[in-house]
Image (cartoon, rainbow, N blue to C red; front, side):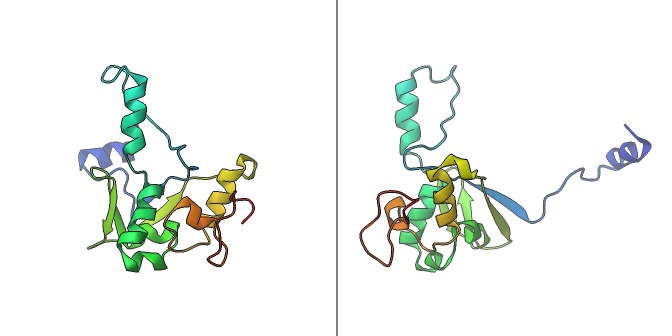
Length: 149
């Protein structure tokens, strides 16, 4: 530890601060969201899959928020945290009352196939209410893959 860092800690200054807040936004294909669990708490894998499958991710909750809040339909997915707050306990977005945040979508490499095209569509389509809604062109029938859009 250097002398500068020692003094910084002695005076109890903050060592690291992120301003504005950065919200990580998940990008996953339908029913392919990341699932985590503690094996000591829930050893049964089927229970974990059932419980996690009913929880919303930032992406699926984004679709629901576009249905619930008309003002949300004017925002792209990555711009959503500037006007809405992700409440982790409830797994829902609520309108932001104060402050500011930046949304950051997880990276999707071009070789990741459909996930890359989903990422691209989320960067271009405002107000999507479902994965199928992202696949619609000019309000027509949904196309079968994100790549075909």
